[in-house]
Length: 146
Image (tube, rainbow, N blue to C red):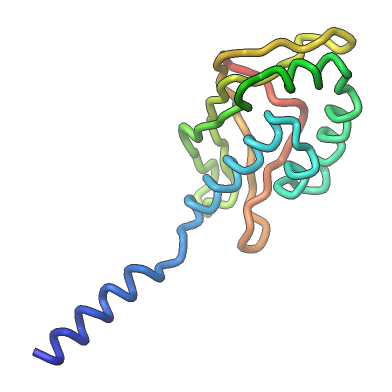
């Protein structure tokens, strides 16, 4: 009886301390980046991208107008994100395409004009494994597949 109880405790303990899979870590990274990016929290979004992508975040940040800030402040809730699919694009699972859906976000159709709130759109992100950490790679501004 005592040995059974010890075995049960070991099994329960092992189940509680399992490390997250690479895919779970990637999903968390994509969610954290997207939530920050689509809520115009560019400093937070910067934590989730590689160095080459920083220029795109800086570009977006420098084009935010007072009208955009006013639109964002008038919203009752911020943008929300769901990670829909993760597709590894190499056998080693070190590069991935991630499909996300974003709800209730400010989007710009063109520079110099105020943005508008979009109810829902899908986007694709790219990510790669750097050591044991996933990084989002921006090769431009996110494009909606609507």
